[in-house]
Image (tube, rainbow, N blue to C red):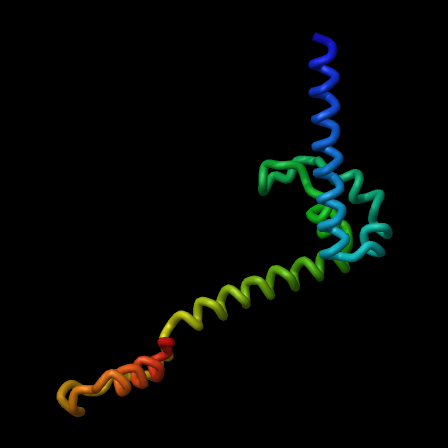
Length: 125
């Protein structure tokens, strides 16, 4: 029985170490090693504390974003650029509002090339 417990504890410890390394790598790639080093004591104190917004413990990146003014600014920039990218992608999917369909009966029926050109004018590819 003792052998099983030791194996489980060893596996759990390896998983926890892997998770911690992944959190460190993410924080360093996002905010930089200098910012993490400068705020390490505060990050250690906050990491694992309950984040009431998510119901989970704070990750290293989340803790760093809270305690470091530079990291908080970087986090805000990343969030805003992500929102802008999402908005741009949504706008690309919509046809241009300036494109107006021709009035009914104002033009002869289009052949395939003409129809393709009109669809491209409306924003379709």
